[in-house]
Length: 136
Image (cartoon, rainbow, N blue to C red; front, side):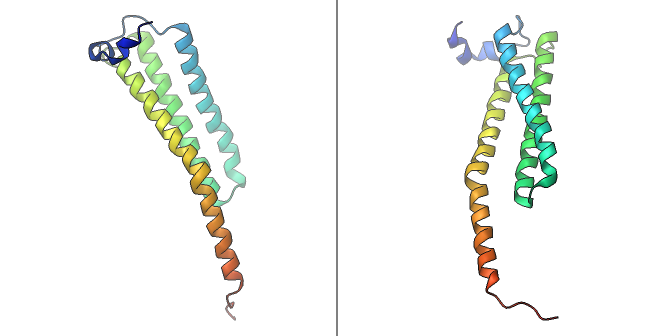
């Protein structure tokens, strides 16, 4: 395998891929698509019993899973049937980078943003506990 081809613009943007994906690349991509689809399905079940903040986060994971698995399967299909321009290597590479960056943002939100929101909500509830209530 020549990794120098990853930096060759003509190789990446060739109209169609001359060779199909190797078995190990295809298996890794299928594992990624399958994992994204399974995570989307599992999150669908969890959406029913969570609070509003967690529900928004799980909805984002669900959208990520369904969209990344659909686009990835479509790109693999184009690659296998050797569709002109749609099977170019650059599209698959861009899709992988976008999917991983999007997943990184989701993990950041899960680890940083959601705990901060929970802490703010607890402090607001503690503050509101001491405020006078409305009389009816």
